Length: 247
Image 1 (cartoon, rainbow, N blue to C red):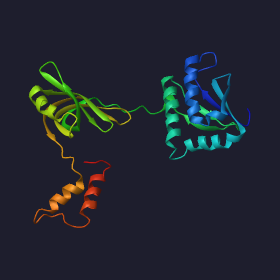
Image 2 (image 1 turned 180 degrees about the vertical axis):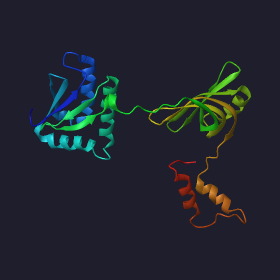
Image 3 (image 1 turned 45 degrees about the vertical axis):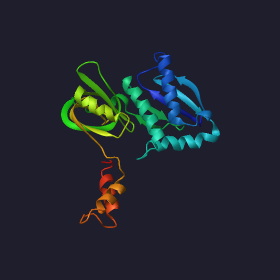
Image 4 (image 1 turned 30 degrees about the vertical axis):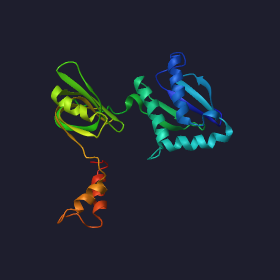
């Protein structure tokens, strides 16, 4: 092996059994992991388990070595961690495990693939609660109307409500955020993300979008009101942000 070559080994394939389309996907993901794409080149596939060999030009070899070593650190950079996950997901799909071997012959990165712990799955459940957002769509031809909410990067769909509530809610289309109360059906994805499958609205309220500083100033203007200390605003902001969410 050349002093500047890295090998990505996939245990379940050989050069004869690795489909060309899948090879292209692995090579693209491997290029993201190695980085320095202008100076990294595909060299060959070696015999035995499919071994994809990449050659790095001399000037960038130390950078690639440090980049790959960073993957196994306690806090790898996000870009490398994303590339690692893409490769590991592909290996798991192919019921494979893999590894990256450095020029000296040592394994520098191991991919658990099929051997990684199975993600916990939870059945969908129904629970009373609320969802917040701006009304961006509302309508329906039958007795049940449907609304779509947007809250930053989140979009809530499959929200049902009766026509009477829909008529009132339509007044706030593209307006101030609202909070919908009702019963929702939720599903937890293996990566920990919660997805709203369906929601039935009982009632709603319009949220006050005034800045906290303005609200606090209004409270202070009331004779005998409590929060008048100089640090009250900072204390309230600390409470709002203490759990990482704005309430």
